[in-house]
Length: 278
Image 1 (tube, one colour):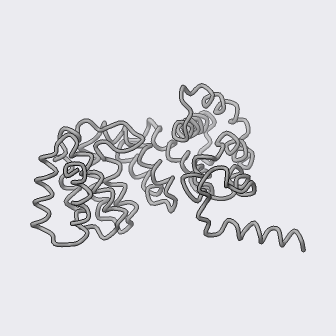
Image 2 (tube, helix red, strand yellow):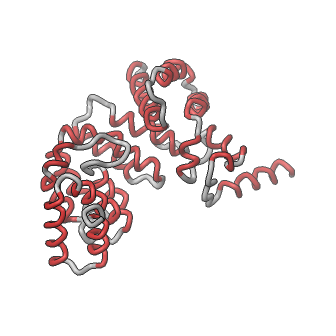
Image 3 (cartoon, one colour):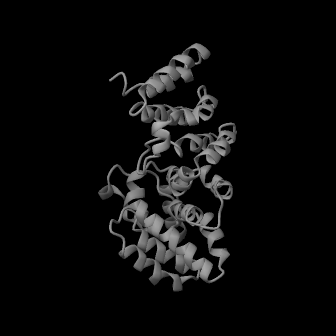
């Protein structure tokens, strides 16, 4: 009976968690579950504190793939800079390489559906680093992660494919224009976040910094989006563009003010002009 009680108590601590405000406040039981891949991170603090090498060892053991561990661990150790993102990329790339060498498609499927959000982040890089994919195939493959319920997976999904989007910008904009009409707000948000001229945690897309008008159709499609999540992304896109092409942003916002009286558009405009009006 005491074992059942302990299981119930553990379950209760992981349901609807807000997460600790600092790493030192994370309960040891929660950290253990995170490092075992048994639960998702609840906020950025937890996301940053998970030991991905420990998590990798636990997950590979669970999937009966411990023969992959040493090679990927060496890849992580050889990184010049170890951050959550670089380790994510190294693990995802390592799993992709080893799965190809061993004709092991099963592990790619297993990690893409794993209960741990960080493991699903690795999955994004097995897509973004796959040299066999065309940009059409890559975006098609990444879409389910763009729609993931976890914030971290959604962020890594666009980071994992952004360099390929930049190299295939015209075609990517065509594909993502269709995504702006998707009923899922997460997919609509990906359609702008992935092509922000400057963005966060990523290289800039120089072509969009100099020619933001290339994305005009995509922006127009979302100028009155009902989702605040999408509105924030569109506003941030305009703010990015305003740092190199302020006249484009000012002219577009004036045009939108005439075309739309929606409060959603007004919110996007205010957010997009914040650097210009500072």
